Image 1 (cartoon, protein in one colour):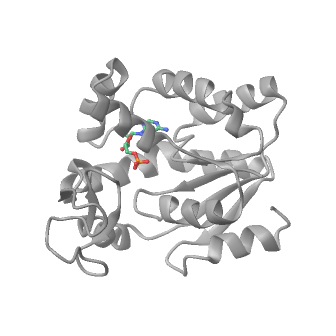
Image 2 (tube, helix red, strand yellow):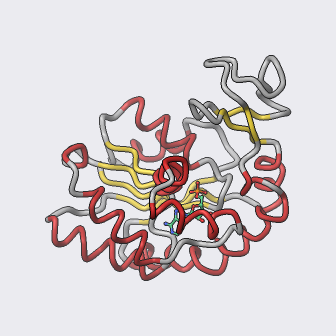
Length: 214
Ligand code: AMP
């Protein structure tokens, strides 16, 4: 299975990816996670990406395309992959198309997780994450037992800089301007599946399976 998850920040791409990954042994590739790992390690890529990320802007296309070209050549992608947060612009989608042709791979589906902006703002301003292990919390739905301390590993639980409200609104605007066009692009290629992302967690998996993607 080779799929792309498209959705506004906070639409639940990471959560849905975890559900799919639990059932299918395919690589889960999140460009946001890859960039954050680079920021944490202080690599050149991380230093470059951080200023864009903190401002809620997209990292330049060529930087992301080069990073993904390397990633998709890794062995774990042979069995299939799920791209979470890439492509995010039309040039990235076109570059991915060329890259897959080169690798002799075909995309099975581009899944669009549809959600309203205000639902996203509510979800993301209450999201918290463990700095050490990445466990996700929510101040309303799933708070850490001790505020600021991870239940799992004892690490520090923080709010991501890009989960602050003004940054979220900027990220939503960027999504509508720059990422929405790829929905039509995949629609015209006949691989687009739309789903209501305000629904239950297993909805994506059920939809994919009902369309014969497995
Ligand atoms: P995410 O965790 O997917 O919301 O990504 C966090 C941030 O990383 C985004 O707001 C962008 O600054 C950057 N980023 C992630 N994926 C991409 C991409 N495909 N193109 C450009 N920037 C990206």
